[in-house]
Amino acid sequence: MLEIIALVLLCRQIGKIARSKGLNPGRWKFYTVLAWFLAEIVGFAFAVLVLNSTELIPLMFMGFAFAFGGYLLVKNILDKKPDHVEDDIDRIGTDDLRP
Image (cartoon, rainbow, N blue to C red; front, side, top):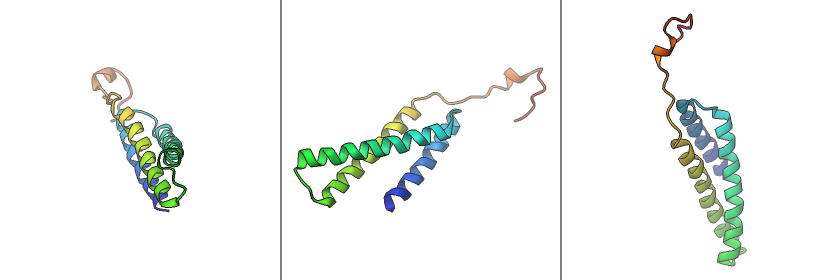
């Protein structure tokens, strides 16, 4: 349950960043959820192979750590995108006077 709440809050943050970059926030939220779950599965597999553990608690912690890493990966990619700058000079002489 806490994982879902964390994922919702992190997706909101990614949406704000994507909107400020002039990108589609829905697409980046989807990328975040996809990266979260794929990295979580990799984390579970890593914990089973490296820790040789079948106990649930270490598997959950490793999965959560990898899942957060998936979020950080998407955030890093998004942060490297250039910011969206709207130049008013491009709209001079047009009927588009929206701010």
